[in-house]
Image (cartoon, rainbow, N blue to C red; front, side, top):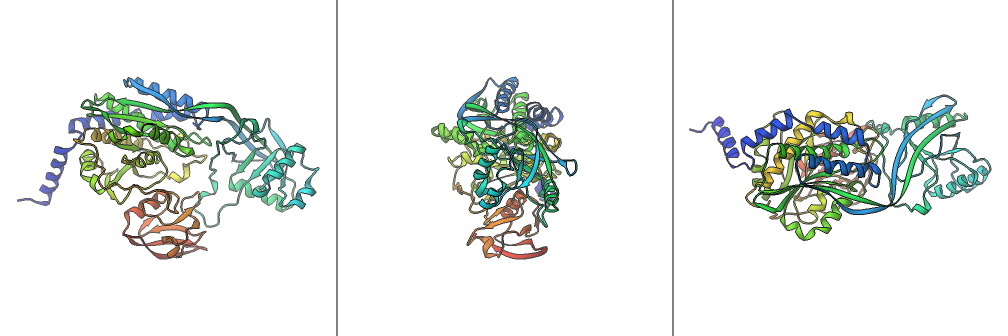
Length: 549
């Protein structure tokens, strides 16, 4: 007679029987990945010794060469760099700081975008409100030598810049007050930048961005009629190109089908406002560690496992897209692509087409029962949807590309592209566990009897009016905190529910929304008919939302 306990045991035995990673192999992977882990050492070297890795920076080239040598040090003979393109101008960021000297001494927490001008020395001078129109500019002329201008209107930056350069002004300072009713995002300084600069016409004036609390102090002093003096030293350096740019590739050859591949990777580049830890040092480190684990246990996959660390991801998936375009004729032999680019939270699941579920279940059978504290789930989705990482280059070419689901106590929004993306944000036990999951998934996919099925595989193009909003599209553009709506798309689900710019998302159904990835998961996991809870003008409200089935 089958009792419920018997059924559970039978299911577990059945999973083990048909798993693509044997119990002995999984035990070896767990031991190597948990007891002998090197993942935090990889991360430490990458983000602390090398540092931030902006595409076109010297640090990125050093990181690529180090990663290649590290793969080779594991015993992977075929580890190499493959150039995918070049940038006309390189950019290296040096140290920077700011302070107010009058009417009181105060440190100013600040940053600048990449590929923008810095100062040539510590530059101290009066801070003046930027002229807002032609009349105010005319009145200010003759008084701009050695000054900083606060919050220039975007429409007048070029004209104001010319006036500052003509009179020897220092540059611009920008900021904004803390968002009323916000979730605490006012202390975040995001770093971005546009690499399309001409070395013969480089920008000359810095645009310094202040943290909100620092901005508010300066603005209050000016509003009160006080004389404000500030000093900034920002060492941004341009390098004449062309700057060659590389992907790092390392192969563990397949024993039965060496011409077929499973790709495991993440992106090596980062923004340079911090050290690029959770975006994406953590993913690069787990990729390296998965390779080390498999080599250490003597894994002999049936298909080739190709580890890839791309660059240019932050500028638009440039490295992976270029690689896929160059190798598109080979992609019929690629089974899947696994990308870790979601920060330090543990890998909690994988989502694929329903037809893939049986194969994925045999691949991840050991993981499904390996940890009660860090559970793993295989989810069925209606289509592969864009969220902005390198797996999309593969899904666009018809290769199943997976972006891991993640869960845990880390707040990705707090570190993503911000000044807080530093080594201390990484969670060691999550990094170790995720490395085990990746190594197991890579070996399991490589050992499948057949390539992962592409039956009924669907790929959704574009964000559908939601910035990284997940499989179901709410139809909103979100602020940098990932929860505050800045724009609602006409005719969208959000518009029909009555959501407006300024609303702050709190819940989808009964799932709380604290950051962008919470929204994606809540939308994908919820029913077609659900509710959205939001705060508007300090009052919490709830509205019905309906998605097409």
